[in-house]
Image (tube, rainbow, N blue to C red; front, side):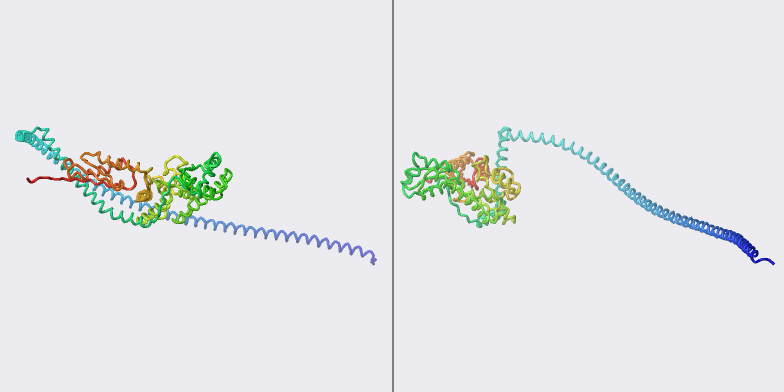
Length: 529
């Protein structure tokens, strides 16, 4: 019998061997399972690969089919468009062919017509040449006949050719003169009929709207004195007061034997007004010395400057004119102290503005613009004693400098015809200025100048042939011309009157118009014995 102790190791060895066998068997089984699984995966992968390849082939085949279909469709569309365009081109070509055919037919017809005309012209030329030959022959016959008849007439009338020509020219001249006189009469009557009524209505309506009173000023102002003793104080010791006054004002002071009056004289109206005010204040104050004179003159200068500005503003307000620069308003105010031929320039400008507005209103134009131009037309007279040049050019330059419209600038420059008028407003202000200046009482002239103008007017009318005597009447507004009845016939009166009027327009400068009246009188006197 074996011992238990010996059996135990054997049992352990047998158990270990069995575990080894089991381990080997497990490894072999795992390897076999792994191989099987690998083969299965490989087969599945191969199947999937085959499916993908097959699917790709199918999709590629589908894409090829779709592309082929699309290409065929595009080809069909391109072919359709090409055929459509080709058809349109063919239609256009057919239309052009038809038009060309029509033009060819038309040209052929014209060519036929031209050929017929050429043939007709050739026939006419032949006929005309034949007629010219016939006319030449007849002219020659007529010349011989005229020569023969002329010689016969000369023999019968006992007149030479020169005498006959002179007689014929005299008759023609007389007939032409009568015709010219009739034409002039008809033209004058027609123009008067058409224009006189309307012009009178426009001017009268404009004048009726204007009611401005003028005051006549001169180059001197008088200052009343309380007593003649004040004259000595004005003169001062050795004349120092009067010299200081004249230096401060730029105005001459005349102290003469006239009782109770001192005269301040100067061409600058503003300075003269300053001097007058300063003199009155000095007389009222009683303290007359150089320092006081200078102080009061400065004070009066400020007062007059304020009056100038207020006067300019008031003129703009009265005429409803706005937008003028302060410098222009001040120049307008200075016109209060400026006169022209005794006519106050500011009042004349206001009257001209109203006349312009009246005329513009009758003509359906802008009355506000017309008033503005009329008020500013003599703007240059406010500074013409300080700047060289005529007052229209100076005024236009001032208006342009202070941003007035070009139509205003041109109307100011052209109101005395210094330049060509560029608008109807320039013509209106010319007419309104002449109306305001030429109305009775508006201006006064010196006696010497007045007489010279009348003499010049009579001399111009007397310079024409056939004129016997001339008389200037109605203050030079009309000239009466008496002609010699033996030298001037009735049909020549209208021509003579027109020629005298034209010569007056060339030689004389005058406002308004001058009427020319030509008179002819024939007297036949016989005595019964």
